[in-house]
Length: 204
Image (cartoon, rainbow, N blue to C red; front, side, top):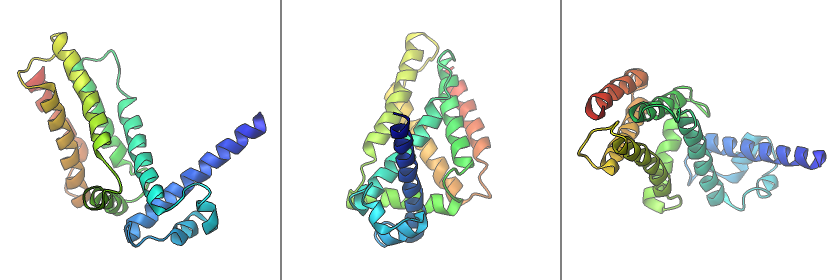
């Protein structure tokens, strides 16, 4: 049993290493020009080893997108205090998002910008990845918090919860884009603080 657990852990770690190597290669060359042998070289493994984990480049790219967004969501949403007021929960999510992006867990600012643009390009132009379920998960989580706040009279607004959630997600997308384009000019933490101040005034 212990040997099996060690093998499983080792396999998961190698899979993660391949995903992270793929991130760097996709960021440098883009999805269409990236080659599996380049990813293998970056990961320090033989090309055939990649195919033990991913059947082709498309599946590897899809799995990388899922890995990145799941990691972001886990960091962002698990930090929320379930007993906090609803607006504080929303601001906790926004703040955690900014913290996650600020620490650049999987690369440099330029790499993050490159892979982000490539992900959106493949989602819109080639349909290799579908980002709609990711946005839907994020929006639904925010909608539930807002609805709960309205029911308990902690949030006072005539704006539909779905619209408020959409505005918040749009803010996060816009903030990320501005920060990636102008990392030395945009104070991501200050923008979050200002936005949360607006939320508290508008929803509290």
